[in-house]
Image 1: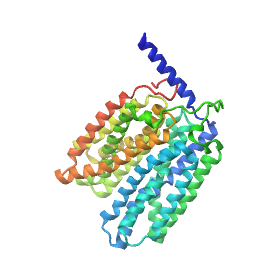
Image 2: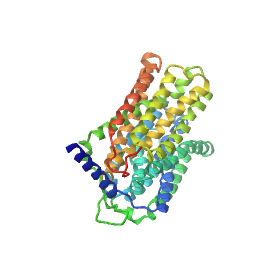
Image 3: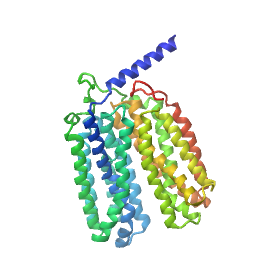
Image 4: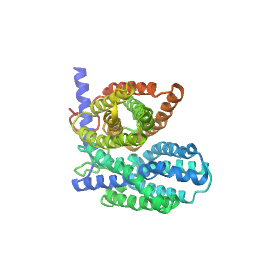
Length: 436
């Protein structure tokens, strides 16, 4: 009887929390929110700067006679900057609201990218500026824009994350092509100037769509009210201190970190691995491009399914599929372009799904009260995993002469993560019925 009573109490607590944390947004505002977030993500730090570094690397290294290792270090530091910035960003969004944080982030990121056009021959200055771009630019990445969607969506939350994330996917594909054309036409310095202007204009448009249509968002996140307009009912959710005492926070954080190590580590070394198998660089590039297709599919499909099924079950399947893809590559069972493309598709699907799973887990298990800071903390570990993974894969190859050990380890980690995520249990802040 006591167990039954406690179970009912937990259910009632979850239902009350769900009602208290329900966002305020009509369907038109929700559509505009997804559109604004998609535009913002398409011209944010990740596509405009990080995604184009490989295009700028050669002309910059050539002009300054830098080694490519020195130049590529900028990418690692920008990612680290974004990881550290995500924690501060989350705290600021929780305190002041996204409307007061994202627009300055758009402006600062654009200005910093524009400053690269005046870069002189100092590799340390270049890498330091890259760190700063990542640090301030994190507001133009998912931890910024997804915090807006988390406040405005409930039942279609996963789909909103997936559709908005398509913006980043499109930007990641398009921006390197734009950068290449600008460099070829005007030189790399002018290219950075034009990229910065474009990021500022389109980022400003995204903010206008997101915030000028919703005056209520100019306040703090805690000012979100009940859908019926009861302003006295405060947003529900765990504080960061409560989250740190909750084993589910550490479980999801550990899973996100190790999955990032496994998937992003493999993704960075993918072309090198494929060419080591005797496949031409051009064919390897085409196979690797399938990963981009997988990322897009992962965002949309997983986002859609998250609104129908229990999120840990979706994560379980996603991680197992990724483990299968990596294992097939490790055993050389995937032969030919078609086999490689299938495995790469599974890997990309997991990376895309992870981008939806992170904010979804935070929203459903920890609510909105400290959503920004909790999500920022999880995103920090995701970013660190993205740095650690490529290093681990590289060290394994340098010492053992192949990626086999790292790939088997990644596959095992993904299987363990799939099993561990099932321990998350029912939602605390979300739909009234736990997913199927």
